[in-house]
Length: 295
Image: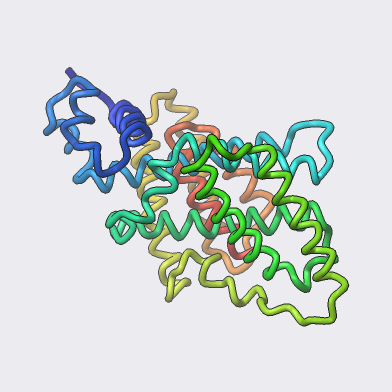
């Protein structure tokens, strides 16, 4: 029996979600797919590589839901923010074995997994920043990064209690509690004479995924991503004309990202179009993360 890489990932995602990383083996994944263990290794050299792919898919799915939430009609910025907190708790409960427990496992030191974790952290920080600005306005800019830091700490702590004591805490009531305390904190920080502690520079390492030599690493990452996109396009299950159109678009993106001043509107439109292809989506999102971190 022959299975695709996506089918292997689907089985792995289900098992990691149910059992966690340590309690899932390559043999378990193979049996769930109905194939021999060796067939899994055709696509992935190790369980760590499979988990990294599953982790990345979970992140993308989470931010897809976040994007959908921002487009809901009739919600005030504060109501939208409240729903975003509830979504965060609900999603992380569902995927706790993948998105929460990895912090206690050796895989967080895996060479392939580490960049994903940095990406996740940077993407969340940017999202927290946008949420706070959306709710409280540009006037919070002087203390924005202190608020981001405090909000992250609050979410992390209550997420622990939500995940491991979920029966004793209401998601809705916890989200309302957090929002209420944030309102008080923002009001105090805006009227206080105390100077902010953190500046944007304090978060540069997070926002650049923890990469030390960022420019050189960016070029290397771009090269890898474009090679993978080219390989994916060559086997894309679509007509030759559509495949050619996508390749031209990829070439345009590749040219633009290497310019000192790329055409951002056209670049973003091109990436949005490419992201619609399921086989390219994960790669395109990674590209967007790097590009948008510089804006």
